Length: 451
Image 1 (cartoon, rainbow, N blue to C red):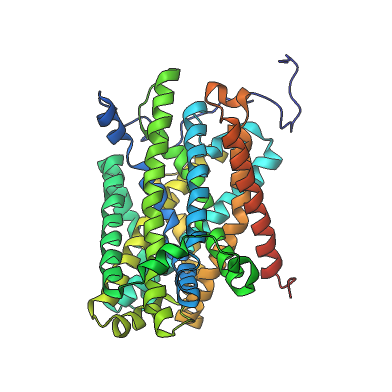
Image 2: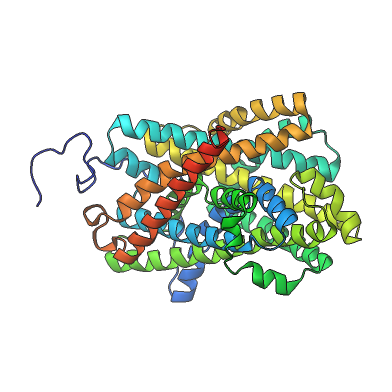
């Protein structure tokens, strides 16, 4: 029953938001996209944020696990990619629901709902995840430049800092231009992999069987470890903050019917986009299985190693170039979305607004320093190890974003009429438990406690 007495500093049942939500996330583009009349035209106007989120599900960090899984175990781990994607669809739908129902992104919601001794550590965890994401993007872009143009890795790492000017130029032209840039590069990635898959001529019967569950994943320790890697590296914590911010770029109105329509279209947008991301991730694994595993190359984990082997194995000189183009496009795409996520996190948690150029340079500088140091000292093999480390860091940060998200969207006092239905809360809670358990196992294995 509502009470006029103030809530305790930390009460998970405190009901409605305790603080004013403050300035809108990404205020320069908040509600900046008008919606036309007509259902199909309005739906089309909602397409975009989901594809920006989908970028995080196919970033360079995911490539290593998919390549390793396909080269070692063929098509068997496709089912893991499918399950991971279904989990992502549920979580991103909750992000859209939180934003549309409350007018808050996930960072703002954490700041409003929790005391500072909880919200500040959550902010640190989110910033750590963004820096780890940026490191993976720096490495992936640098490797793409190296493979495609022969640019030394050390120089490629430094060149990645220049993308800030591209992002600023696109932002100045309007948010739809930024979305169009993302979608165009996603199209390039899809075309590159479609051609490579055609050249590889996979066993389509094996592909279909790979999407079916098998007990071998649980009984084979090596397969289970890779499966956990794919599952743990698929859902990115910064995507949860990003999606809940950029879905509010649409001017969908404030009435309940308008919000219900916005939630429906935003959910379709993210679901369609993440299905596309599944196709790309599955293509990486299928390509590795059809080319490397079929030829007995079962230990391919480095991006450069995969690039060198593709040409001879597929018998087509264009295959390595297509691989490098797709990798470079992934790296460029990811830099755009990580910048926006970083801006939303800083503004939401701390209500600190920095010029986009300064914010980008700070984040990219923190990523370039370790990436440049590793490439100078260890070369390409070191970048591979650093890439894996970033995925470990991201996986460990994920629980700190997922658990609050599920809590908020299950609370009717915070969400009102758009509270998540009971079946969705139960499913999301199960996903949160699985993610926490996987993170604990990952930490157990990574610290060497697992033997």
